[in-house]
Structure formats: C-alpha cells, structure tokens
Image (tube, rainbow, N blue to C red; front, side, top):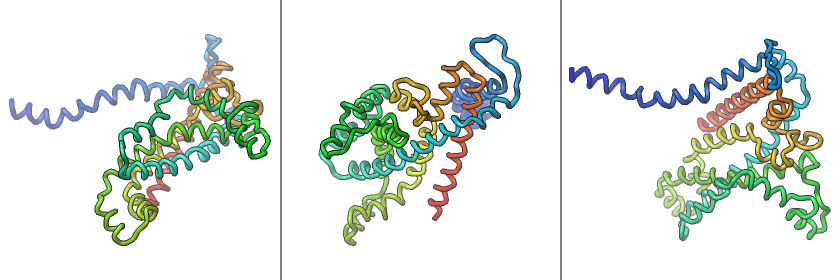
Length: 298
C-alpha cells in the first residue's frame, strides 16, 4: 500500500497542482471565449428578448465595414508609434539602472511608478498636457514660434499623443524586466570587454543584447498583445467618446468593439468584432514569434 501511495503521489500530485489553473482558465477564459463565438452567430440585441440565428452575417457585415478597417489601421499605427520607442527607451533605462548607482532600489521603484498609476489619471493629465489652448506641449511649441496644434483633431497628432501616454506608462515596467535579465549576465564578460577597450555602447550591443534576447522577444510579443487591445487611453483622451474623434481618427479595435456593444447594444456584432480582434492578435503574435525566433537563431 505504501508503495502504491508513493507512486500515486509522484505521478498524480503534479496534475493536482496544475488543476486549479485549468479550472480557472476554463471558467473565466475558455468558456467566455466560446460563448462569445456563439453570440457572434446570432442577432443579439440587449434590448430584445429574441436572438435569432444568422450564421456568419455579422462577420460579413464586419469585414465590409470601412470603420472596422479604419480601427484596425489606427490600432496598428498606434502600436508602432508606442511599442518601438517604448522598448528602445526601456532597454537604455535598464542599462542605466544596471550600473553602480547610489540608492538603486529608489531609482528602480521610481521607474515603476508610472505603471502603477491609474490609467484614468494618466489619460486625464495627458489630455491637459496636450490641450489645444492651455496645454503644456503647445505652450512649449509657442516658445519656439510654432502655432498651437489641435492634438485631438488630426490623425497623426492624436495618435502621437495617445502613444506618448502608453510609452510613459509602460517604459519603466519593461525596463525592470530587462534589468532582471541583465542581472543574470556574468560580470566577467563586461570586465573582459573593458580590458579590450570596449565602450559602454559596444558592451550593450555586443554582450547585453545577445544575452537577453529571449527576454526582448518576450516583451515584443507581450507588447504586441497589449497594443492590439488598447482601449482606455483613446477612450479617455477623446472625452469618453467611443468613436475616437469626430472623424474616427484615433478609434482603435477596442473602441470599435465598445461602441458596437455598449452604444448600439448590438452584442452579436460586438462579439464578431471581438473574435476578429482575437484573430488579429493571434496572427500578430505568431508573426512576432517567427520573426524574433529567426533573429535569435541567426
């Protein structure tokens, strides 16, 4: 009996340890995903009791809607404008924090402060910073003789303003992830490089970057997933408008979904938009994975 219980413990206990995760995932992840797919195949209006089956009609309407493609384009543009500078800045910030600094814990906590700040507070402050009449950015531009910019009115200007919010909020978070990876790089490599006369930038590009490449790949994939779901920043920047500006110039996929579900109460169409967004995120993550894996192998 003891031998049987021992074998049962060795072979069965690992499954018991992972069961809670899969139960929670099935309840709060898999089931809502499947149910959303079911809803997307119906004409599902919250104001009506009848939900007739319409098959793929919601998807047909979605893929012929110019507003959907505009939201997808805006999402991709904001992702590029926010993710690339964010990860580059995070890398240099992490490299600085990895040096011998006084009170290193203080500086590392300071880098994380923007991430723990409420997104509503961040959007409210940056809406004032990018204000047309009394905004800080326009005041600085005025010192150089430039005219005031209506940041919400233009496509490029509004997307730059939203990207700055995202960069400010997430750069420190990614910097700490990079810093954790940099801490594992052997110091002997840097000492040998210093003896060979390598500059700080050469050490960063020739030693640090190759050593933390898997971490960089991780942050690229996670930032891609997060960038495709951006919602709060454009929603609050536009004064809680779900259209993303008067001409939908900064409406993202998340805002488009929110507009369909909670403005028009068309949950069937919103569910179809959610599944389309899920497909876009999966494709973007797969593309990122293969691209970064190829770079890692090279």
